[in-house]
Length: 336
Image 1 (cartoon, rainbow, N blue to C red):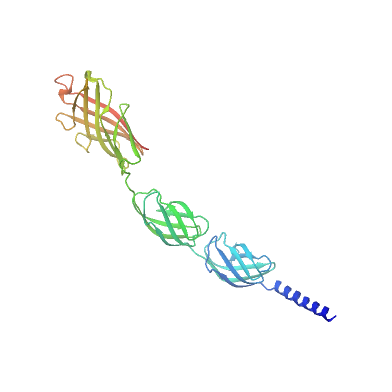
Image 2: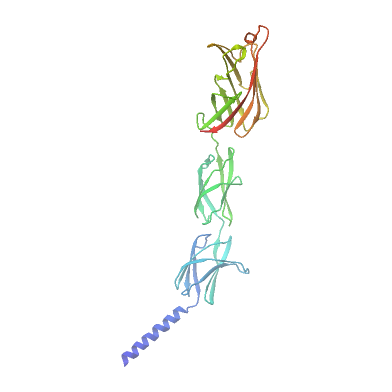
C-alpha cells in the first residue's frame, strides 16, 4: 500500500510540474540579432512558447504590423523569418493562444549598406560585384546613373550586376532593396574601341556592285576603303573600270549631308580603266582632277551616299573634254 501511495504522489508531482511548465506565462528575454531585414531569421528566447506562437513586428501607437514566418519553436525559443517589412525600429510581439507579450524597440530594420564594389572601372557588359549587408533576400535594383542595371545574383551580403551601356565617364551606383537605398559610390565606365580586324565587318556596294572593303568600325567612326572595285563598265570602249576610294565618317556625331571635296578629310578617289588587259588610271592627287564624296543618309550602323570624279582631259573620249564618272554607295556594319 505505501508503494502505491508513493507512485500516486510521484505521478501527481510530475503532472503538476508538466501543467505548470505548459502553462508558463509568455515572456521574452532576448531578440537576436538586434538588426535584420527581409529574408533574415531572428531568434527569440523566453518562456511560454510550448504551443505554436504568432510573431509580429509592431510600432507603438500604430495598428500596422508585419507578421513573421515561424520556422521552429520550443517552449523557450522561437526562430522566425522576416518577410515583408519596412524600415524602422519595431516592438517584437509574441502571442501564444490568448497570452501575449511584447519586447519594446527590440528589432531595427535598416537601410542596405555597401562596404565596397569591384571593379571600380568597367566597360559595358562587364560584371560588377557589390559587397555589404542588409540587402535582403528579395531581389531589388542596382541603378547606375539612374538607369537600372541587369542584376545577376542577389544575396543579403553580395550583389552582382552587368555594367549597362553608357558613354565613357563616372557614374553614381545606388542599391535599392525597396526598404531603402544605399549610395555605393561612383564607377568609371570605360568604353574600349572596337578592334580593327575584330568581329565587326563592313559590307558595301557601289552602283549595286559589291565592294571589296578594307576598313573597320573604330570608336564610332566608319572607315570605308575600297580597293580595285570592278564596276563592269563599258565606257569609252574599255573592258572594265574600277574605283578605289576611301573616307572616314563619325556615325554618332556626323551630320547629313556631309561632303568631302577634293583633298578634304582624308578622302581619296583613284580610277583605273582596263583596255584589253592594259590599265590606265589616275589618282586624286594628279593635276586637273576633282572629286566629291557625299554622305546622304545614315542609321545606327549604316551610311549611304554618292561619289563623283572629274578625270584629266587625257582620259576623255576627245582631246578637249574631261570625263565625269559617278555612282552611289551603301555601307553597313555587321557582326561576323
